[in-house]
Length: 72
Image 1 (cartoon, rainbow, N blue to C red):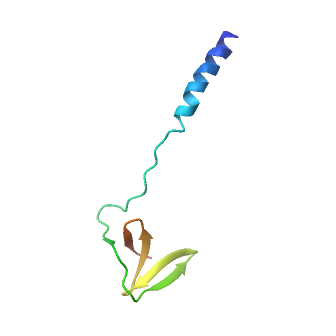
Image 2: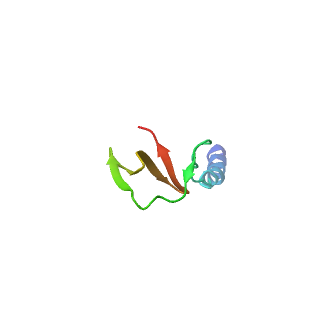
Image 3: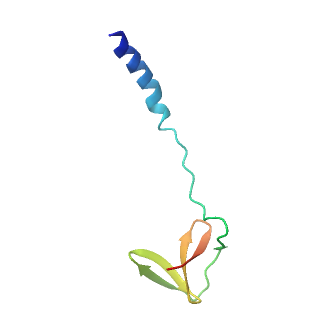
């Protein structure tokens, strides 16, 4: 009975602590240039269900800070 009570008390203190994880947004890898604004003449292209922006013979993907160049 004493073991069950100790496990119950320890479980009550450890369980809520695991749910307090802070998640940060993804950053583009180092060395990747982020284009802040897209030009006026762009086209939206879907490849395998994902949305890409096409201009200047390049494909770009939308990220939090702008657009990054994607190579297929």
